[in-house]
Length: 117
Picture 1 (cartoon, one colour):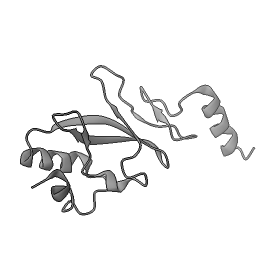
Picture 2 (cartoon, rainbow, N blue to C red; picture 1 turned 90 degrees about the vertical axis):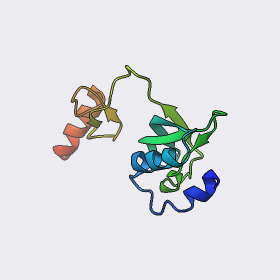
Picture 3 (cartoon, rainbow, N blue to C red; picture 1 turned 60 degrees about the horizontal axis):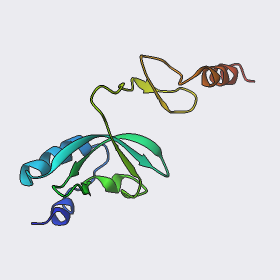
């Protein structure tokens, strides 16, 4: 069975990248699981899991969940990098250390919107 043949049987992949990559790695132990972010041109950056084959090519069994269908950019998480703790209440970008906004400008814009300005 090829990777593509296996992926055809995934079904609805939305939000299941961690689970599906684990399942695929059992069938194809030569694949390495990678955790990181996928940058979809239509949706922006999203947390994601994918696989890499021995030649270094990306095998993404859940790419169908994205409008760009895997044609975006895969960014592997590097051990020691800061972990996002949420999303900015104003712009939707990742925030860290429990913050609610990614920067002071976003915080101000959000507060003004709450006041109707």
